Image 1 (cartoon, rainbow, N blue to C red):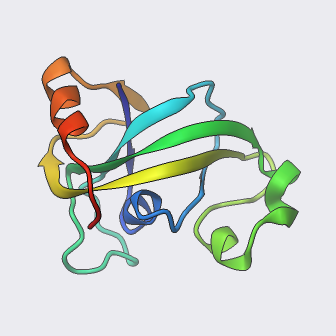
Image 2: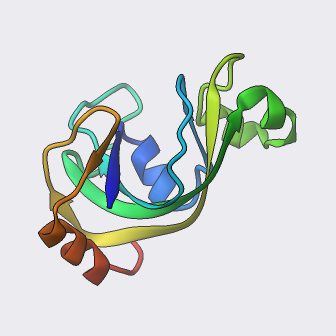
Length: 129
């Protein structure tokens, strides 16, 4: 299984289904379920109690397209949760799962692979935050 690190609070927004597009400067061909890792970096939008440095859930990536294609069809709230400026890409997200117990783990940039033991832990997790 692949994983991707996202800063808080956006990582929480993804696993709670509040954020339905992840925007990046690069496209991805990855589709299917990926683990969402909450990066350790705190920023001005971080809220007390949010997990850091842990896998907090999973989501399915169903598509990837230039932001210009879908920007006008998104809500103002969705636009606020990403960088939809020209030249960027939107990864469409569906079927989020939020873990009850985050799995502490060091993250990495870009997509990275989880070992089989972690995948088994992730498969056991379900429920809502």
